[in-house]
Amino acid sequence: MALTIETEHLIIGSGIAGLMLAHKLGQFSKVIVIAKGSLLENNTRYAQGGIASVLGPEDSFEQHIEDTLEAGAGLCHRDIVRLVVEKGPALINELIALGVDFTRDKDGSLELPYHLTREGGHSARRIIHAHDLTGQEVLRALIEVVTRNPNIQVYDGMFAVDLLTTDKYRPQFGSNSCLGAYVFDGKQNRIIQFRAQATFLCTGGHGKVYLYTSNPDVATGDGLAMGWRAGCKVANLEFMQFHPTCLYSPKAKNFLISEAVRGEGAVLKDAQGQPFMHKYSPLESLAPRDIVARAVDREIKKSGLPFVYLDARSIGAEKIQAHFPNIHKVCLEQGIDMTKEMIPVVPAAHFSCGGLATDSWGRTTVSNLFAVGEVACTGLHGANRLASNSLLEALVFADRVSHHVQSFGLPPIPETRVPDWNSAGTIPTDELVVLTHTWDEIRRIMWNYVGIVRTEKRLQRAFDKINAIRNELQSYYWEHQIDTSLLEVRNLADIAFLTIRCAMKRKESRGIHYNLDYLEQDNTQEPLDTLIW
Image 1 (cartoon, rainbow, N blue to C red):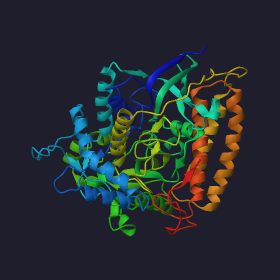
Image 2: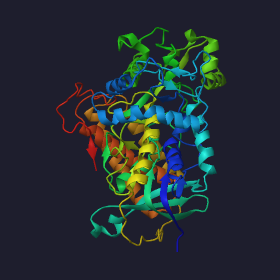
Image 3: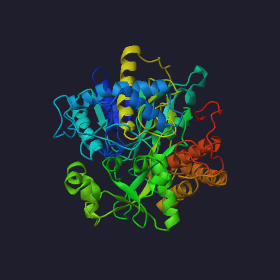
Image 4: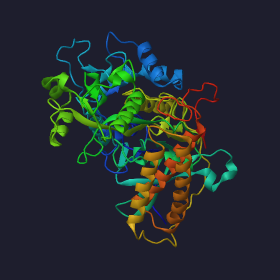
């Protein structure tokens, strides 16, 4: 009989959403956290810029709300925006109490001792940060508090394969409930059945579905794919945000040049060293990311060079080294002194504004299954995320979900026996090159046909190609034994399929979905959100 592990709460994912939720749930119940790799390998670790929150005397909730709504191009859910913005300061104070060492302002007052920076789309300085390694510092503090709590068990090197749901085994119950997950233990090469009263998907994003991305290799959309396969509603996956300034270097894969660098005065320039953003927005280099990414993409195609430049020299060497020490260090390692030279940059897939549709308490359309962080679509981001709102969202919804579970409890789960994992008749994965080739093919299709600029013809071509790949993978998956590469490629193919479906359904250009065949925004579509099953 296969190993079964039971707990009250099962958290799949170990970034800021998963660890903050574990910290809060672990104060009153037993929690298991599953990490795909180590606790340090997730999107949170690579978050440079910081967390947006109203902390300064010249800022206000209303300004932050309006900035978020403006960036979201009419698709943000105003009630969710207000909820998240107004909860922000309290959650920042919680992080400080947990030991997060945010950057201090040498000239700051006792009331506001922390340095705040500004990023594109923000009307005020409201980004609190830990130099340019904010995510890493937040993770450090959360890992310390989580690993000290005896109520919390962490299992690393564990890959969730699929969710356990009642409709698979006892459909007569009528309401689909989550029972836990089948999890692949790569160390022991076995499947473990984790059973839980409530399951929380905190698995982050899926940037690796694109050829160029700022995301780490683990960001393959596993939670999103599992949730959809289990029956969750999916929303707004056409809105993949492309970060405009990823370092162009074959040696420094996935390295972002934080938007905060532009917030401090860096300017985008073309191949001749001339500023160009004034042609695209009155906000110039501080325009929202969708505008900047399209402008960079257009300038690259015009010049024939594979990059444009970011000129940070006007910031000054002392300020660069004080506020962006890691970016300065990495650029130096690539032979670029950003205090004296311009930085070559390209756009890269960065953050998904869509995901598993949730309500204001983080509940999905499957009972006893929650989604928190980038894997979820809460309605905060709309058609384009305002910079540094993502870590804020993860913190607020971790708090909301914990409060809901503690205050209102959970629906009862019907007693049902879930069968053990059956791998009878399967054979070992014989040629990994098949999976590597398929992975590369999916990512190139998505980059070329479902990228920054789209057309109906490109989307249809991508849909046909991805469908063919998914059909091939379906047979391959059931014939071969489980391994990490197979699971990731399977999930990427599902994510690509869902993204294309969403993009084909939206017959307009809005935010970060830009379709040359439908250039105008259409406010007559009902509902405004793209929803698919």
